[in-house]
Image (cartoon, rainbow over all chains, first blue to last red; front, side):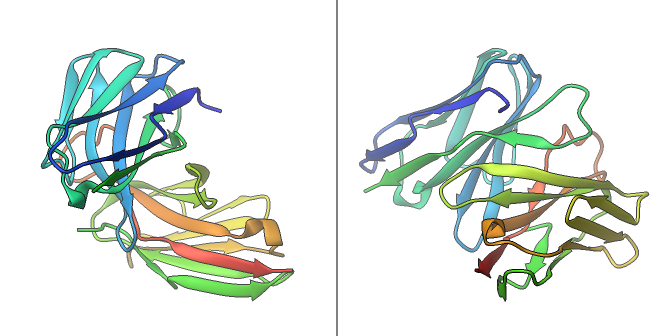
Length: 113
Length: 115
């Protein structure tokens, strides 16, 4: 257990509404990541963070923004949700001193109607 | 685009048999990792092999890496029903400067082990 909590775990929303997913870690690790998982695509990186206020885009960042104002929290925001953003979203961390493996949260399932 | 491509997409075997999954990737890498995902759960790290390693073992898992062919295989020996899950390879690229630990995942292999 890497002390990662994602919230909400399930959310149904309507097209055009804003949505924020939260990833909270208890171990103060520097690197955090947001991935989305869709059938036929595996996991794709949305955004990542390498420190407080240090974030960058991943492979599929269009339509998403992130913020990291505290080490322990990494927020993913969909400013105006679209049906194509229906997905399962996973947060992950990389532990300091680890060889490179990531530790994942349990996922947030988002449905955009 | 996906860095890792896995095959087969699905594999069905009987308990006690061995399961082999393959992964191919495109760019040069620092390491290649394998993850497991049970239905409805997050991914769990299984094993990591560095680019200068050719083979690694962990319990019933054996991973090989061929950097000249940009490919890897995961062998699960003496499979159990509890091994039923999706398995993903992931690569940390060393192209383009600092990786920041970012991983690129394949599409996964769904393994079903029948009791």
